[in-house]
Image 1 (cartoon, one colour):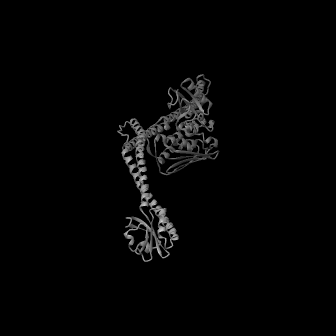
Image 2 (cartoon, helix red, strand yellow; image 1 turned 120 degrees about the horizontal axis):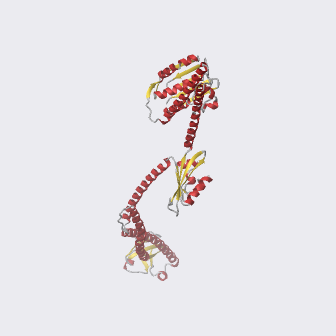
Image 3 (cartoon, one colour; image 1 turned 60 degrees about the vertical axis):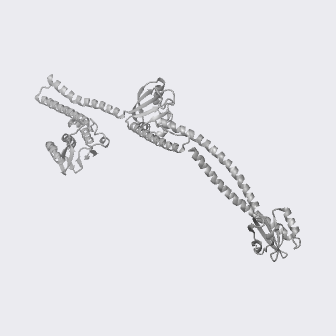
Length: 555
């Protein structure tokens, strides 16, 4: 391949040489022709001034003294040669038909039979004679020949030096490239057979290595994207600090926890990320003690459990020492759930304790014979039964809540809701008559997908609440359309500040009245759980002493 490069270089230089010589010859020839013409014209001007018609010999001596190659001729008006410094037989011929005579003042180049060389002629009429001068063209040719000869020698030397330089340069240039390609091939487990001077093969091998590298880079990018996807989609925040406490890895969960962007902290000191002194102290302690630590820390109104795990090796292998992985677990909801459980058990205990205390007190009164009359005994027994029923209802509702929260599979069915509502309303007819409440039903035939037991709890609780909290002589409207159900009463209503809390467990707007009516404080919580379970939306709209309206929008 190097030989081909040298030959290519040789032919390029040779072509340039030919073009240079050709151009140079043309230019030199043109310049010399112009010079020759000017010289002839000047000689002719001198000759015409000196010649007076009788001093032709003196004219010839004068001019040839300046230039031995100059031919001087004096021709009569009739064409006969009167004087010629190169006189021979041909000079006896008549010259009127010669081009330089017939076209006076024009330069004529032609072959001279007398001198047997090409000459350049110029003639003028002066004092009744033709004065003609000529100079050999061979003088110009000698100049061009000399120029070309020296140019060829110089350029041949240049060609030789250039070829040697090209051989050396190609070897010098290709050798390190060949070595690098071989090293890359070795890294990629490619067996490459490359000759130092084979640039074409080298080019092919480079292309092969490039394709293999592209393939490996694509594979690496795919694997990186997989890892990034996994890291960014885990529920916990993940942070890696290297030995000099720079953030070398951080996922989206951790970034959102600190409300920062990746470019603000990645490959920067950990203080750009941690602006909480408590976290900074734990990071420093984990590095100093090379220990694993954990601590629950509040960050941006959320509770996180931070796990600080010391790693014996630096993450990016740039420094001696270890690195630190930090896992952030959002325990805000867990803490809320724990609080809800604590509150639930506390409320449940309180709710169960009240009727149980009342029952025990009544039984003690009976046991110790403090109640003498039958009427008083009947009232105590009636009160105990009422409290026992309330206690049973609380336990039943608690079990239903537990059932709703723990149940994963649902045995649903297509339920004709209009017929189901009618069947539930039938249960409450005695209570409606007792309180003289007017019930208006506007039921459009509709079907929903729901478990019958859940539908019973949902509708019974809403209708039961509407009856309980509507005064005697009140009105309840139940309207069922294709995609929503409205249960509206004109009862006591719910204050604005209480409307957001009525779905909480054991929350009562009026505790005294609720207990008197047998309420457990869990009914609307069960309703909310059922709506969430099936993807229904429940809305409440109420005003004090004007009534309450519950709307359920089905999925």
